[in-house]
Image (cartoon, rainbow, N blue to C red; front, side, top):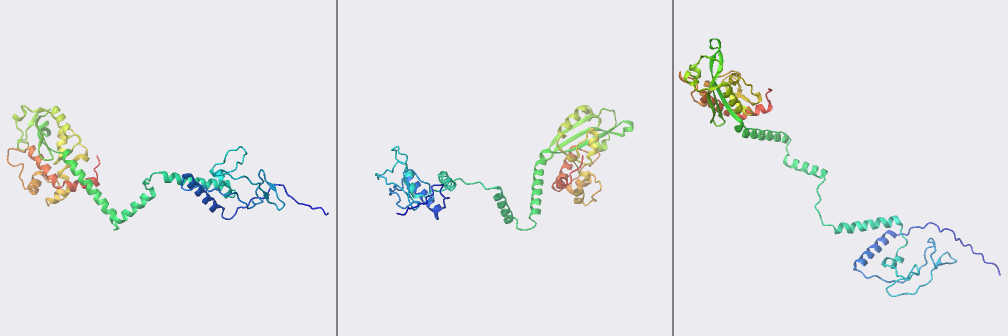
Length: 354
């Protein structure tokens, strides 16, 4: 008899090739396992596959090599609702092991990725629905759309700036009455030949013309000329007059931090020996819109008597009894109210430098 030579290779098996449809099959098996765990499906007990395994898989315990390169698997006794024990300890396999014959040895990387996707889907479905906040890019896009709808014209920015300036001016005008006063002072002559003007009376009124302060003031120097024809001051007024130092402190307490309106107001401040910030000073003798309303040259310095007669149709400083500082202060405030909005807008755009 001739000898029979068998060429058997017991070395490492060749690299495993992936079967077509493995990914779909894995997904199907995983979904079925998930439904089985949740109790929607009953687990199927199927006999182990009789089809020979690929020769690329390594041999397992109890398997013997065949001549054609396949591996012979010994038959195991079937049990109801339990699978055979693989480790020989007699303990039944879990549900996953019971259907392990369905899947053809998936790769670790693909299995882990699919498991992560499955777990992520379960976790997201368990979470309550929350309204997500829009991102910065979405906010910018919505703002752009709304701006296009609300401002279709090209001159929209100009309109917005005009509205903003009008609102600003209205706010300023609302705050001004609380912090605005008008002042007028009457002076007498002191020093050599009475040429030095000294404070002898001061009157301050609020925005509505109500008197806040009206006192006769005794100058620190001897009075040479009472100037009664213009000041209205007489000798008897100085008997109970307030000393200059005390009166000055009282007056500055009222003026500090407020907008002070006056006519040729630099003369009043000079008599008070006081400097008020230019940004808080309104001099009706140097307001061009006021002169325009009175049909006078814009740069001319008009008298308080002339402006009051022209614009308020009222006579002041009449007669030989002299001026009334209260009457002059009230007239000054009324004249300023005529051009208040226009002049405050001008000052807001061109603030004076102190």
